[in-house]
Length: 380
Image 1 (cartoon, one colour):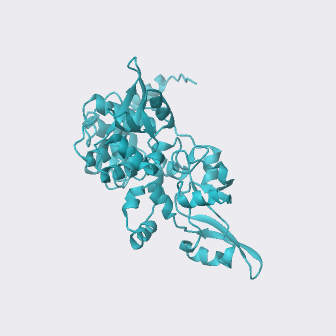
Image 2: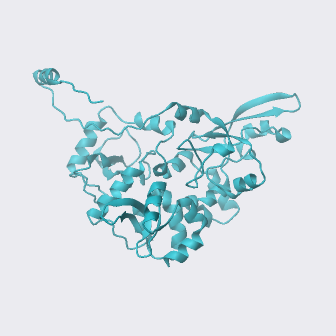
Image 3: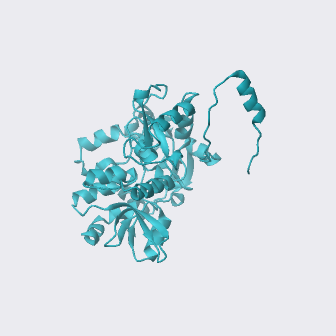
């Protein structure tokens, strides 16, 4: 609905007071928080069949989730789990061999799905000594099979044993959701609320000033966003949102911003990463000379795939390849691609479908990882 509001009287009052006139930029970019988002923060009990693994990641009604079994009645261990979450059920983040085994065995326990980002899980179990239900909270551990299945932060290359256990100890839920934010249209409500309340009241004015000073160019990749200003953010280098000193502020495109340390977690819709890819190609700054360049250009959710490709020593892929129809219209964008071989890896399912219609062999992240030998054979 379009709103027509007359601010002329307000403008006149501002001039009479001698106040400085400031131009405010409005954006129509709204990330809704629906009732289900709040419910997922608390946890929803579902049947295993209701959980979707299309991308390889666990999702529920289009939201990225974690799933776990809340009940810890077996072995009368609920008390020990509340004291030490590492003794409890592992939570799952992706399609893994453990879940596949349970599916083959016909074990379809009821799971709780959640996108809570603090790592705290509601648990319960019967105390068989006093025959009483005990409820509490615990810091459960992530399933190592899940981490390996998506090669999260190169987990698959870690030796089994101490190195992997140490990785599990430092696993950060918010970092995980942030990495794969392009795969989903909604972010966890905990991240949304934290992000919206973190900045100072005059942040819009300060941000605009910094972006103007650099002529709306990303200070990292050099992308000119003069005509796409909403894609240029201002990053707090030290992560402290109240520190607005100029030495602490850098203007970065949303893609470079999300890849910075201390960016305090942010949600970048896939449409924006695709637009960044298109503009980089248009402006001739999407060149790559080595695998480091591929990592820097590609969506972070593809880093697990890129790690395996690098280890197999295949040719460097194009990043953000636009597939065109006979009329020259772009009908799909592939995150990684080998155009001469007509092989690619897509984030979005519809992109994969459309590219396939034009003779491409397209893998999802899930299939690129699980069928890596086949992918490598096609692009060598």
